[in-house]
Amino acid sequence: MKYAHIVGWGSYLPTRVLTNDEIARTVDTSDEWIYSRTGIRERRIAGSRETTATLAFEAAARALAVADMHPSQVELIIVATSTPEYIFPSTACRVQDYLGASRAGAFDLSAACSGFVYALSMAAQALATESVRNAVVIGAETMSRVLDWNDRGTCILFGDGAGAVVLKGSSIPGGVLASTLRSDGSGGELLSLPAVYHNPIPVLGPEYLYPNGHKKNTIAMDGRQIFRFATHVLADVVEDALGKAGLTIDDVALIVPHQANSRIIEASAKKLKVSSDLFYMNVDRAGNTSAASIPIALCDAVQEGRLKPDDNVVFVGFGGGLTWAASVVKWDVTPPHVPLLDREWKRARYIAARGRSKLRRIGRRVSSRLLGSPTPDAPLREAPRK
Ligand code: COA
Image 1 (cartoon, helix red, strand yellow):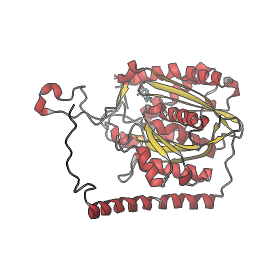
Image 2: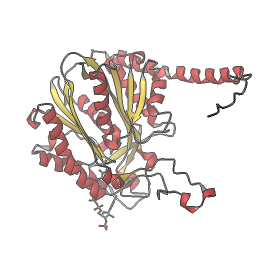
Image 3: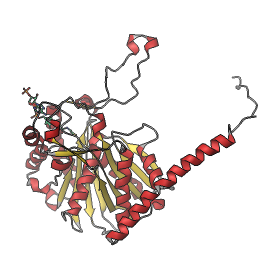
Image 4: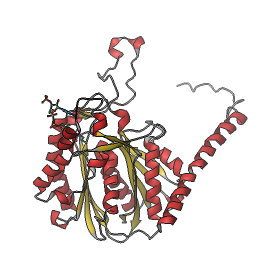
């Protein structure tokens, strides 16, 4: 039995800042309204050459540099995302390729804004049973690509970004101590994003046109109901996970919640009978980055010195599905000291490794041209008779 310790962390936010005032130029809203209802001042928007996978890769490269691990040592990559570029190949496979993580299994996990906590819990189990020795867990989103920018109820809330942690198995007790995962599919329509495969089949008649009624692939949300749901479940799931870890709220140094809305956090803090200062918040500058929000907030909290060795930290997420989840983590394994220059050099090497992936693609194309069909002269076999 091994314990899954966090030994590396990293985040990446696109450079383009979109302020509330800018949004107020296109829809009927204001900075004052948005800030007072959500706590959000600005969010980041991915550039035209950026994708969920490139953001995820940047965060993973930073996290691996902190952990002082080479991508070839990575055994598992999980990307929690609701905005993959493709259903397949998964975003995780693209990150695996960009990193040159040649020995890693890779898959995406879909649990909306709870995705990072779900993924952390799955990876911790894989480490505990020793099926892998380490894992990179990433939350990454390009929410700006799935928003209806004319819907003021949703377009003000979300932003783009990615965060990652590296987990390493160790026989020293600690790390991810306990998790609670929950879901309630009956509330699915309260926050939804249709997949891309609702393809009408005109030749078969009107009943085959958009059979589930979806007309566009953008987020639909009942804001009031989601607000109620979030304030209802957050405190309960934190207490449940703490109970499993044999801890109480008094043992917690910091809660890193999903960054959706500062009012949800304040209401949940009241329910837990703690000060809202126990919760780390960066929603003002990043907005709601869905599955990416917790690892991005974690990196900011570490940067600001909000976590010390031996602190108990709780991650708590909630969102579409409906899903909600919490993990209790002992922040106990100090990563190897990698001087800043060395860390940046390593990150640059990982980024250079992306070139390898391009070369492999070109190589495949060339060999396909040169070699032609793998079975050009193979005789056609008759299908076996039953
Ligand atoms: N700017 C200005 N006015 C807006 C607005 C905006 N961006 N969005 C809605 N309004 C208006 C509404 O049209 C409504 O007007 P009306 O009273 O004339 O009908 C009024 O503001 C109140 O709307 P309501 O939906 O009740 O506002 P609210 O206080 O619930 O705030 C949210 C709306 C979306 C900010 C809030 O419900 C929320 O944060 N919910 C949770 C969403 C969330 O976190 N989702 C992600 C979960 S992972």
